[in-house]
Length: 104
Image (tube, rainbow, N blue to C red; front, side):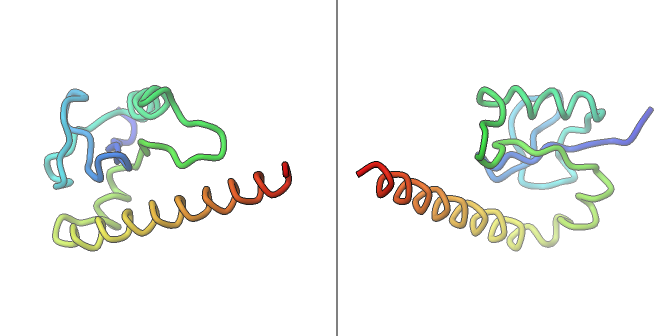
């Protein structure tokens, strides 16, 4: 078997559960997937990734997730992704304002 993946949901700020059911904030309870399964989930979630938008779901190798987001650091993980969503929202607002200004 190849490398094991977990899937992070930006929409739910949690890991996908086992068998593609539910979400869990603890990595130890996240579903384990092959790379192909993780990519399948991420490309089909909410219609797939749209051009110039952050993906709603992200495949992460388990060994990387264990290194970067241990369960003990869960609050830091939530703060990080919340800040990323704010940054993306500000970027989208700037792009919309620039577009509107160019079409006046």
